[in-house]
Amino acid sequence: GSRLYHPKVIEHYTNPRNVGSMDKKLTSVGTGLVGAPACGDVMKLQIKVNDKTGIIEDVKFKTFGCGSAIASSSYMTELVHGMSLEDAYKIKNTEIAKELSLPPVKLHCSMLAEDAIKAAIDDYKAKNHKIDTTFLLKQIK
Ligand code: FES
Image (tube, rainbow, N blue to C red):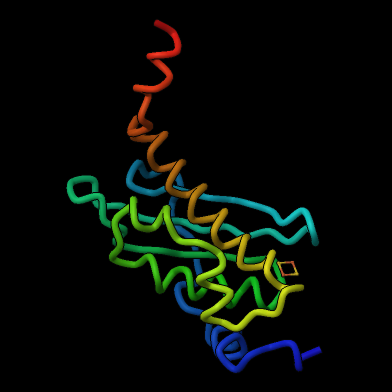
């Protein structure tokens, strides 16, 4: 029921930021598409990265999920806009859950947002050959 939801969740839910999508074929765009095993909900989050600075210049999301998932991804897009890839990768779902005062049963919804931003960053790096292969190469040698 709606008693579960904090006003901040309701606010992001009724007025979500940065909803939409970008052309995933662009090399500057990283796309993360993840699902929550707990409920089957799905979230897509995309970032547009400045190749020179490594800064996230644009963010878009689409969520086929519950109110907390929508609020979590909306808040996530606000958080990572203007952030470096490294900093964005370090964001924990607990930060989102805390900000939105999510109850324990809704923690996995914020996990979806953490998984989605990580997947988007990984996708961007893979596309631009920025995955650090030093470790892998050492294993081969
Ligand atoms: Fe599935 Fe929230 S209940 S993401």
